[in-house]
Length: 193
Image 1 (cartoon, one colour):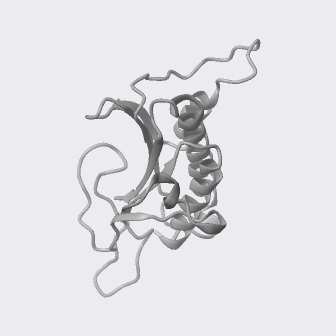
Image 2 (cartoon, rainbow, N blue to C red; image 1 turned 45 degrees about the vertical axis):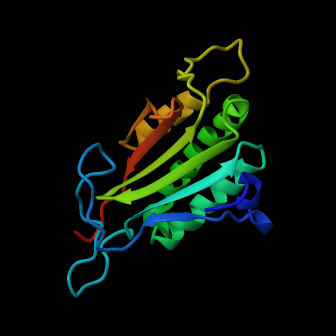
């Protein structure tokens, strides 16, 4: 993509989306949960047995308006990948909450060192992974319940929602000196099996 970070935010709250991959027959990567092999690809000659796999990036300026725009772009992509309907409602709601919290944290705490925030969505092998990357090297920690504080519980909420859904989350350093915070949640199994 070219242009300034601000030019990537399109009219009406839509984002330009950078598609990394996105075919139903994509070869799943092996590794952490959310990147392993599973049953989300189409069976030969049959309909897809789950969401269509792929990887998409949503780069946005580190500005408050980017939080709802990113959330809406991720929601639209999840629905386009086949995660509409009752079976996926809780998963989509959890992912959108996680995206909102992580992008909000990046915009609030990392904007001075990171003029751009990049959200990545990956659908692979029965897992959906969302990650938010910024250029700030500070590694945040989830605050425990502190009744004296009115904020600062976003990462605790992300961790709680992720674990309750049977997923995993972590914070890692990037090669450029920033950080990426990610959460992987399992796709609900097909009830017809």
